[in-house]
Image (cartoon, rainbow, N blue to C red; front, side):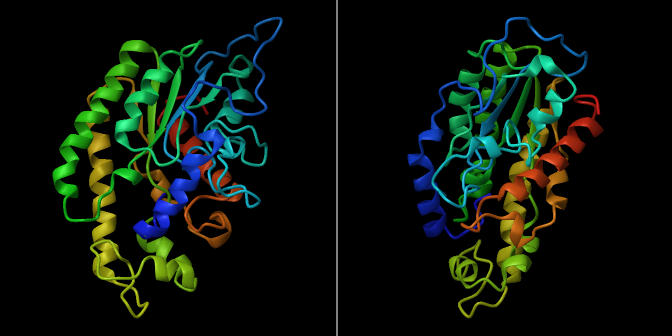
Length: 293
């Protein structure tokens, strides 16, 4: 989630874009098995293949403290293979051995809804076709310059086009959108004592959450949260029009925001954060019956 001021957030995204892990070329997550002599038996109700689309929140970007510019896809809450994270993929794998190696991460740092079109095209070219499509988006579409209300409809129209691509190319796939983790207020409360975060989010801009003196700015916090909520409302509305599309119903908003859950860049989740995110996403997936518990 890009919670930092534009200048600092842009520098982080630039690093992510230069990472060798940022390619949208189809590839299984690190550590995945790509071939077997005998195909594992599929467990009814669970997907045999998973793909994640979206931005750096899904790539594990910023979760490797030794290399913040690397897309640490093994740490991804969605398709990662790090057992500490216990990603959605690993949770499915524990119940359905047929999904082994079919965990593809097409997310890319710095991407917005326009990039979902290309990622969706990549998803429907996979073999096997994805049976569960996880999507984490919004952040990089936020403008914070007063024009976000005019962007909601174009955002929704482009989102529709991406969903059309998935539905046409992988008609059996279930599509699941996740919301942003935590709230603007809970993030600012957790990091109000961190000078770098306060400086990066201070000013007189619409989305600045601290004033020039470093004091919390309620109007900015409320404005940014409303913009986020409006974009997610567009996702919910477009998703509700489709039989195989679901959202977490803002379940991730309830995620606790604590410093140890956020990486050293103060912007992306740490390994512990991805672990918490995966647990909440899994609860939403199973709670809504998208997949069995």
